[in-house]
Amino acid sequence: MVLLHTIVNYQYLLLIATCVAFANGENQEVLNGNGVMLEPVLLANDSDIIHLSNDYDIAIPQLLTPWSNTDDMLMTSSLGQLFVSELLTEEEIVPDFRRLTNQQRVYKTLFQKFGPMLATGVNFQETDEKLWNLFQSLEKTLYPWIHTSFKSSFDIAKSTNGAGIVFCVGDNHYAHAVSSIRALREVLNSQIPIEIFYIDEGDLSPANRQYFETKFTNVKTVDISQILDPKWTKLGGWAIKPFAMLASSFTEVILIDADVYFLRKPEDLFSDPAYLKTGTLFFYDRTILPNWTKGRDWLLSFLPSYSTQISRSRWWSLTSSHEQESGVVVINKSKSLLGLLSSCKMNAKKERDEVTYKHVHGDKETFWVGYEMTQTPYAFMKSYGAALGGLAREGDTKRVCGNQLHVGTDGRPFWWNGGLARDKNRHAEEYTEYTHFATGNNWEFTTNCIQETDHVYQTTPEEQHIVERFIQIDKVRKEEELMAKNGSVVNPK
Ligand SMILES: *[C@@H]1O[C@H](CO)[C@@H](O)[C@H](O)[C@H]1NC(C)=O
Ligand SMILES: *[C@@H]1O[C@H](CO)[C@@H](O)[C@H](O)[C@H]1NC(C)=O
Ligand SMILES: *[C@@H]1O[C@H](CO)[C@@H](O)[C@H](O)[C@H]1NC(C)=O
Ligand SMILES: *[C@@H]1O[C@H](CO)[C@@H](O)[C@H](O)[C@H]1NC(C)=O
Image 1 (cartoon, protein in one colour):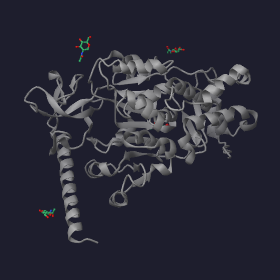
Image 2 (image 1 turned 120 degrees about the vertical axis):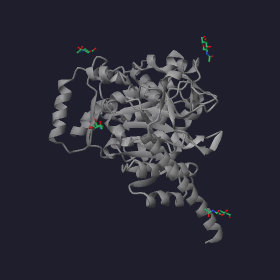
Image 3 (image 1 turned 120 degrees about the horizontal axis):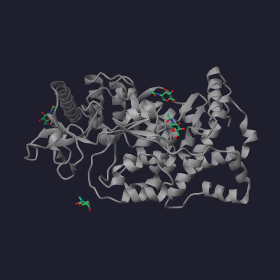
Image 4 (image 1 turned 180 degrees about the horizontal axis):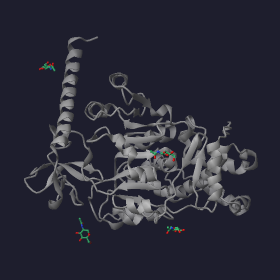
């Protein structure tokens, strides 16, 4: 296995010079074989961060102590061997997230030690043989699924490029995804490349795959089991989402649920200032179901240190049991690969069945919580989940009820989740209303209404026109579906 990248160019040398200049332990810059892998170092007093804090909640992590000669020496002692055994073993059935957090943090310090060496072709495999072996063994313990396609995590960033959208679509979500992608292409004129991930051969039928590949330009379907080893992931349902971001050929990824609709081009997210600063953009879920102490207790049970975001979170203040909405997640893998790997780990088979999904509802919270485990920076758009719909839906003229909406920093509707149906569960046959929206932090779980009477706004005629066109597209799709069904009865092959 040749892991050395012999290409040394001027840019790398410059960056090495930068590393040396900052060699006081605060620098966490990491290079990879194909360019630069920079996990940003954020300081609370940075003027950009102060400025961004009006519109975003930025998680400023605790810096991990870089790997040093003292650590090398410790490893040779009998006490060191005890630590090594902690790092390289795992529980047979129920994973211990405290151990997992520590394993991932040690992995990160080794990643940051070896990254610059790999990039410049330093032959460390002889001089640092034992430590490199430890890194590789630790990687096998933590992220065994990557080794089908990648020699090590350093290969992941190296083998990706560009920016695009990732959808996860099985036959169940096929119809939603067809309308959503048509909406992107035909209404918003978004031409950005799209990768559609499915779990395995049985998840998305060949006919449906062919439809995506032939009806649209720049849309590819990908069987994720060919990229990440299904032996450990055993994907099903939501769990595929972070793995699809990891497996995507794009370096910069917008993950979008099949039933999400945007009112502006999603690729605008790539120029979002908080995304540029941190390498992520996350969205908050609705404020619902308060007084839930389990989330706070859970975090305290396995995080030895945490970012500035924890004390701001609604889990902490007990105002909401839901924190993140993962209908849209934006990640720059060159900046925050280690955070994403950690989110994936929480969704691997054993971890999700025995721990993660026993604490939280699906993959949603595993993005920010995974980033806390590795102390990787992240950013939340500041506004909590809003409601898009109509007035007087439940007989009350002052409330807005409907689908979960997310507004941009300008306060206008950006995207919503839950598809075009008025209410997936109760009014699935009716199309959504979209005359009003409301922001606030008192979402009522039972009615899907926001009860904030002074934060109700009207949608503009332009916004209404966009939604009308989405609905038109969906009606056409339904007709085509019916015709296809009738056709197959009349002309059986
Ligand atoms: C910001 O904080 C860091 C570390 O806490 C400190 O070293 C630095 O001087 C501060 N910078 C400014 C501009 O206050
Ligand atoms: C993504 O991260 C890489 C590495 O830091 C950086 O070069 C690139 O500009 C980033 N992209 C954006 C849009 O911030
Ligand atoms: C949450 O706890 C507070 C304080 O104990 C209480 O006033 C409130 O009614 C509780 N809310 C719910 C929804 O249980
Ligand atoms: C499909 O067939 C049914 C009856 O078999 C008919 O009522 C319906 O109009 C047909 N739909 C289309 C779109 O052709």
